[in-house]
Length: 156
Image (cartoon, rainbow, N blue to C red; front, side):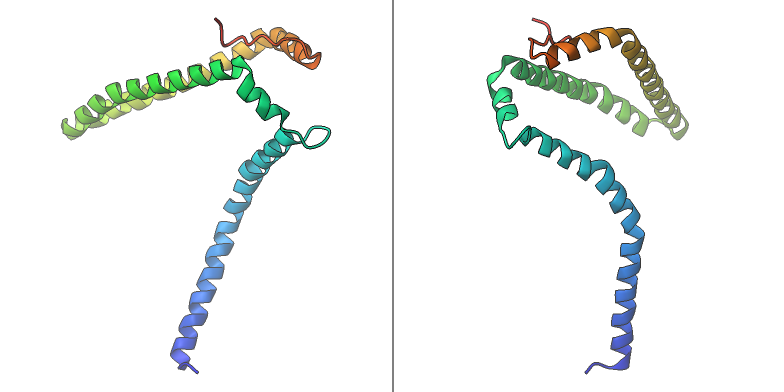
């Protein structure tokens, strides 16, 4: 049997672990509700439609539209990464070697530009959704009728 001091230390350690778990529990529940459940639901829907099926995965590998979409996605991500490296590193270097006041101004200008672009993207996306709503409905109706769906974002 351990000494009373060791027993108190173990009890204190267990109490602290329970407290840390209690503090982390709300965040874990939010992650569960906002990430794990939706991803699990999508995974379930991908393999179950009137019974177990792998038809959705067969379509991904066999239809050209998915390959073109993947290729376009990778091209855009590569371009954005290269541009971020080419523009970001010189700006970050300039901000780090400049006097403190100028470094703060450089970073504030970069932050201002990012916020401006974000607001502009949100505004344009909202407007785009309002303008393109009838076209989206037509595409949805065509998809429901199992007709050929035209992908508006990928053009030959």
